[in-house]
Image (cartoon, rainbow, N blue to C red; front, side):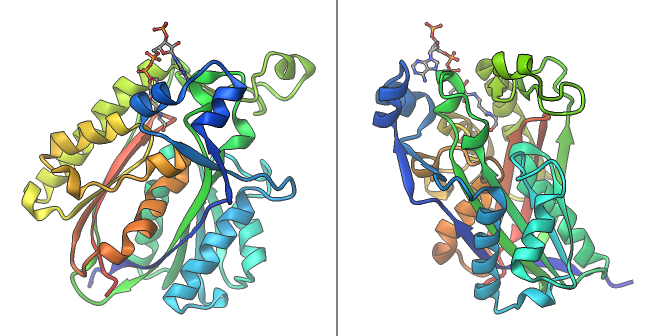
Length: 330
Ligand code: UT7
């Protein structure tokens, strides 16, 4: 049987207008611009201020732009996979809300929860449907309203994240471009290094969980930093070696944007110079499932048909992985 290949045919994005600068954070907590910039690379992040809008809205806006750029109408979409850790509701899935907002009548839709690796897990999953011939047009969305789970009294976590969304359309490739390989890993975070402790079925919302601020994201930064640096660098090198790619063969590293130091360590391990690395963490911070499609969006005009891209991420779970693709938009 002939194996099909999936390729990205368009990218869309959504970023809230409001820019929260490091200077603004200085007025809210004991932190400073110099610490944030040197330890993370972040200068500002976007925050969705509208109280009646959330993750589905951002994902839908990104999806609309991607569909328009692909010249695909919503009712042609077979499948929507939406990666997020900040769903509008526990259920229904945020993907179902987006399906309705878009009017994607024949699409089935589901959420995928893999934190900062969510977009990569979703891209792999969506590409399989096309490779198997079970879907022709798939929407992959990474969207997170991180500000909804940030504790702005905790300077160690709240400075890191921002809100935003990216989306891609996947269609069948007719040549050598498209998604070629993926490697994914999971390792249960038994020490609760990166968690949102309450709100689930184990610790439903009570006055006590609210009073002890358990509905916010918590992180042991140092522990996660160590694992993330090793995980992202190792898997990026592994996918290069598995596919016989030298540093010269790789046009771009598209890394999850959690910390500039993690990105630099990954590029160094791959033998890539800094000109081949997409970095926009200074503008958006860590938008969780949004970081990788937001990089693709920002860089799309600089990408050449056939360029080898390595997409890499590490996140809560723990989850991590890499995707190797040949860029297929002319
Ligand atoms: O995307 C999901 C995966 N997440 C990640 O990959 C994040 C991984 N972790 C990190 O990026 C880094 O660990 C952080 C940026 C979170 C922290 O950087 P660090 O270099 O690991 O700092 P640290 O936690 O070791 O803290 C160093 C010092 C501490 O003070 P003492 O104990 O040395 O006196 C902190 O209290 O910096 C202090 N500190 C701050 N100071 C000013 C922590 N947060 C801040 C802050 N402003 N916002």
